[in-house]
Image (cartoon, rainbow, N blue to C red; front, side, top):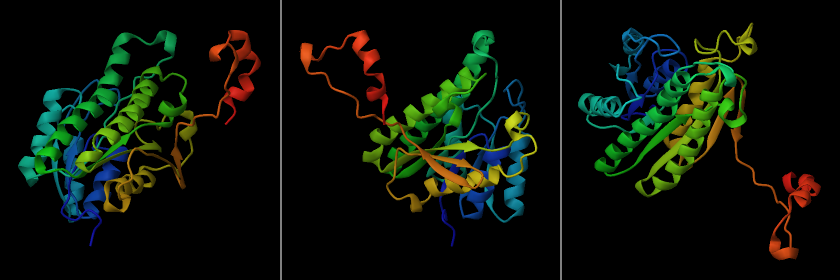
Amino acid sequence: MGLLDGKVVIITGAGGGIGRAHARLFAGEGAKVVVNDVGGARDGSSSEGSPADRVVEEVRAAGGTAVANHESVATAEGAGALVRAAVSAFGRADILVNNAGILRDKSFLKMDEAMWDAVIAVHLKGTFLCSQTFARQLVAQGGGGRIVNTTSVSGMLGNFGQANYSSAKAGIYGLTRTMSIELQKHRVTVNAIAPIAKTRMTEDLPMFQGVDTLTAEHIAPAALFLASDLCGDRTGHVLAVAGARLYAFKVVETTGRFKEADNGVWTAREIADSWDAIVKV
């Protein structure tokens, strides 16, 4: 008996890398999978549907159930068509994994507006549009379901040359937290993974040269956990995966320092003098 028997799962950006690993593992656990991918280059500059179709063939060859979808997640029309495709093929939708993404890396002073807009559109806007459309479908079904978003260590900590990407991923963290609060009443859990893996998107980065222990297959079980009933009612969490290491990202609030004099109004010099105490965890 699989962890996702009878569940209908939508996975965006599932034509390769981490999304492909998600699709194969989820299908192996009994899910009916909608494999979404527009195909094309990692910067999103072109599109062709064959990657999604190839993953569907792999899933079916292994005895699983899947259909391909080639809609763009960056438009409301695409997000709507994606969810409708799941309902049309399988009668309902239960789980959404927002994984689609592109890279257009450039140092901050050299990044142009088009690079910014393209990355924000796929990562952040796409996560918003797909999640909203999917959540509305869950409510129409009577509630209950799971959303797994994909943030990044870059979004949590920042990274040189990725102002657009890190901003989008940080936004996904905030969106995950807000959705987890608002959708609890509909029995929908919303969590995120922050993966570090060597894929087509990252294989030319220096940190992945000669590395074979940071694979997409290391990432998929974390997403499966968050998508399954093993997750229980846990919501609003970020689970990070780097090879064999599993850990969580949290926003930490320091104890801080109170000022009683002068109606509690600090001066800039007082802040400077108390800086170490203010920021100490």
